Image 1 (cartoon, one colour):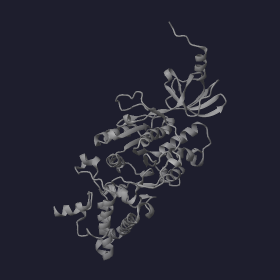
Image 2 (cartoon, rainbow, N blue to C red):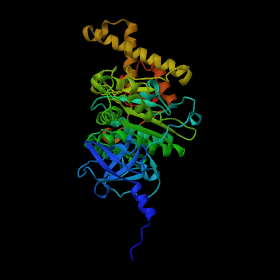
Image 3 (tube, rainbow, N blue to C red):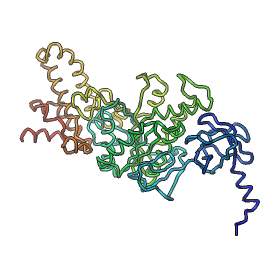
Length: 471
């Protein structure tokens, strides 16, 4: 016997149904005769609801404009659209660790799919100022060059700059490893506009390095629709916020934040909005702020973000670069020149900087040592042309001392990583900030002037140079 369907149930079903009236690429206009869905609500269309749409704006009292998050093949005018009554949601919780997801919260690592459990909307308001921690604190990474010269702010945002082959992936995997060992926290990697092979390669590298079990990976890849690339950052933040709210420290890696802006520009263009300066969307600042302002510190936990930044045509006046830099508290620049010299990690000590490197935040001793290191390395950079033309012997005694100090500092700021042990054969080192400062201070005071430079290369604490000499 078939169950009877009441008139009330029929009316309820009809109220959530709409029809496609216009299709322009990824932009779908839908007619809802009874009840309009809310902005950000998820709509399902096509055969078995395979086409996912997100409501972006209202056109009139019966018409909504939505953006497709999946391919729209098979969709036509008159196709039935169902309002799910909720925004796009992703799973949250400890069960996510070691897994790889897409923007819909579906696993893409060919492992068992997640069923049931806790799911959250990807759209959330930033934490109120009352719930935020107002004190500025250093987020120690255990990497000498970062902690001494460009310290990260706990709950802050840092930009990671560098081309191909300079060690971005290695640095990211080491940060994930140190995040767990130092803070017992979790790491979330968000790939926005990544090439498909890059995500797969990073997954394998993290698995081989042994850091995958403390990491969640989520991707909106280059071959996917602009709507997916525009929303995957919010999905990653939703996962991160759950861990933060459950008393965890979270390290959120975003690669690449420019692709998020680019996806927003594509969505804006498809919707027919008038472009702003240099062709960007007029809502660029608001959209970026909605994402960035959710990254913060609370009394329960913190989200610290490291974001790879692409600067279009190396133009730092580009609106995308200007708005991104306004949110960053530190810049880590990787140098190809240092890679060619074998100085790893290839962090450029003169280009990298941090807004919290002030006596009021890091203390007077840290500030003075960092400034002395920078000054020594900058002086050495100026002397390189003279050395190349005339030789080191032509320099004054005081200048020669600067060169010797700088070369020892450069080598001391190198460091073997835990995640590269299988390639280098060197045991990884993670240093406390105090040990890194002490090493720099002793080198600046010429304590190691009679030690060969190579004794300071790829070591942890500076005392290891003494052991090498005795050996």
